[in-house]
Image (cartoon, rainbow, N blue to C red; front, top):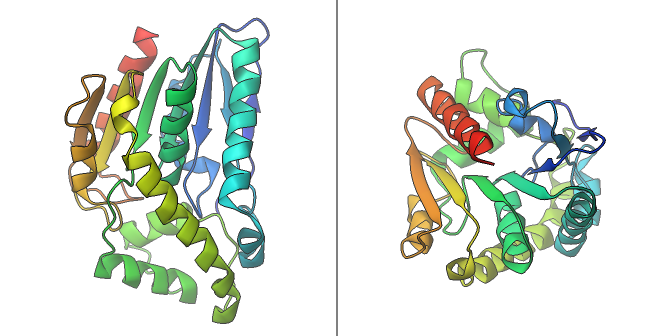
Length: 246
């Protein structure tokens, strides 16, 4: 199991703070690649969404409304104590990030695999099955990356996962809602979409085509959780550039 605790660093009198929001089933350590690039004089809130970090039934007991409220409260707290707030998010977390940026001030957005259009591939099904069975080969980087990004404790009783259905119904509803408002986004935004994402279609980028505030880039040889060495370098460079401009 990967790290499942939120990471908070409050810097007294800091001018800038950064909020990290992981995706559904995810963990805060999805952002380990970027955390070392955050300036030491910035505050950090790398949050853990409710229902994550525990068991299958914990996620079932959570809700989309609860996650959105949790993000809103974390962001409100950062806004009250800092002049500038940046949001970095992955997958479902990017939906919350865009919604919050549209409603109130955010200095910049750095978004990974924004799910505005979904396609479930056979590889995603295969990966999920291997994780469920804990049948992961040491050299399978894609499955290992997905397992590392998985924030729910294993449970071999498949019936316990039925409670996840409402969470995914809520997620699909949130995707449709967010897709309709991307034209209202005026925050400087970087969107990175993986070339071979197992869940998020590259067509998600079309939602930003007429928005001059958004730059969309593709990550070669990468998936929803796995980033190739070239993609990792690209993400780090993009994140560093964003930090320098704040």
